[in-house]
Image 1 (cartoon, rainbow, N blue to C red):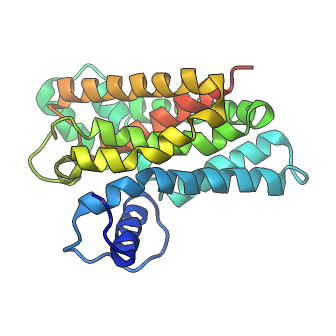
Image 2 (image 1 turned 45 degrees about the vertical axis):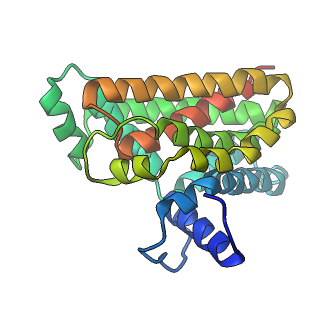
Length: 247
């Protein structure tokens, strides 16, 4: 939705920050349409990317490249409240083991983490850390664009039906209109030239990964949920970093 005033601009941005981060802000008014927040998702990604680049510049003279990459990864996780990683771990437990359909939703809502979730989360963090280390050494601007595209692509996955008629997934799907997608697109498209030819690999790769995860969730859960949305952000962000890690 196109913001109509400075007040609505701030309300939409504040709602996006409240949804995607743990930045201590006053709670948005419940009457604010969630659709107002969606155009700001890529801009929140830009905040993540800017923090990553800032940490890289500030810490590169103090610590080894591996430790710098680890601290950036930790900062991103803390800023998001670990919610995206939690969603990814839950999706590993619910989507990938050989389970009957009625059991998958129970596993997704179980607060305890299973073996698939633990192993999947560990492997994901290892790959993301190594990709981030390579990107810092080769193409640091990948650290900036990866969070932007990840928080844009999750909006497109939001066009899929929700797994349940209530909950976070349903609220998100109802808000993702064509207008919201339109107003969320300028920043992600504008940063494409920053990545050069890597962008031609990174963005399609991340889009394909997001679409595959959405397809898997629809097939095995009946649609998307809040956990799936968090997993989409993590997976697409990592795929962008992997593409930018190509020498």
